[in-house]
Image (spheres, rainbow, N blue to C red):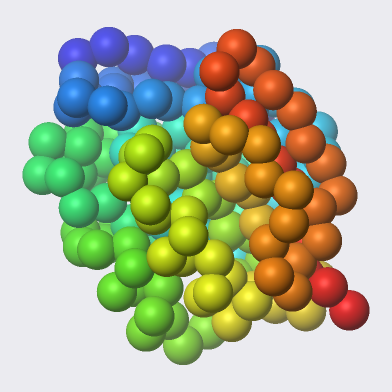
Length: 178
């Protein structure tokens, strides 16, 4: 296992274990710092969804910054075990871990979220399958963070408000359209 650090909030500088599942790409520190500058450092009271939790870097970062609840979805058993261990170590009571398929969860979610983190495995068509479900997953003023191997100009019924690149990673922040 390798380790990454949480960059802000109550758990700032704490290290979390990251499984070595093939294809797992934890969001780099610099990108997470930019994302949480865009979202605002204080996540107090927000409901967050990390659809492809992987390392948990985005979800634990949101929880560290005061999110009221963070739901992390992960299917891989090795990544799931690392998420469980990290949640226990951090005593992350606001984090709910769900082992399962992100698409199925997104299709059946009953309550909307303020922030949805979408960083699926690359080259597997996940973004295209999840996009139609995003507007239903968001509160009226909700935001969606999307990380991909390509630049995304538009998502139906969402407005891109920020974007950037870091190496071969393209990252985007979308808001619910009025």
